[in-house]
Amino acid sequence: RTLQAFERRVAAEAFTSLFVSEAEVATFRAFEPVAPAESLGMGVDIDYYTPPPGIDRAEPPVLVFIGMMDYFANADAVCHFADEILPRVHEVRPDVVFEVIGANS
Image 1 (cartoon, helix red, strand yellow):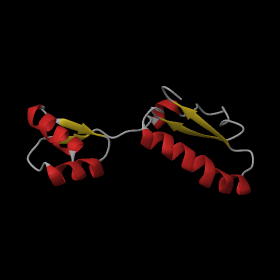
Image 2 (image 1 turned 90 degrees about the horizontal axis):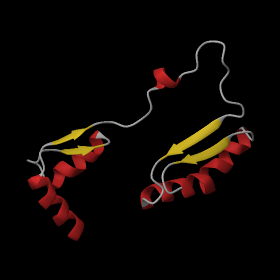
Image 3 (image 1 turned 90 degrees about the vertical axis):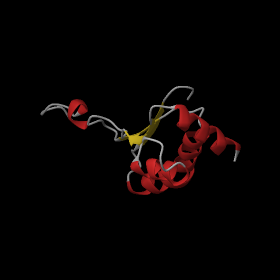
Image 4 (image 1 turned 45 degrees about the vertical axis):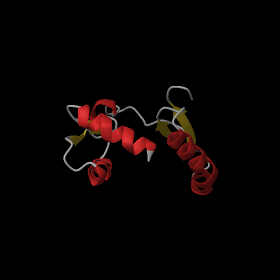
């Protein structure tokens, strides 16, 4: 409740609130329906980072998590993936590498 009260106060003073996904905008609007909010999206420019023809993809295959690691949800997601999902991936592709990239990692 304290965080929600703070978010409402900040939203009332802000020009707009920016979120990563439309789902986050919808959650925000559920408790603050009139405050302006937008989704910016998140991700990597695949076209920019796609290797040119003739250059092979990474060997071994690499799965990457990018995010601030001092944020509980990101640290929790990485731990869950490493503990619960990656072993299942390794059953099919034992050569897959998991890299965590981000500040405070």
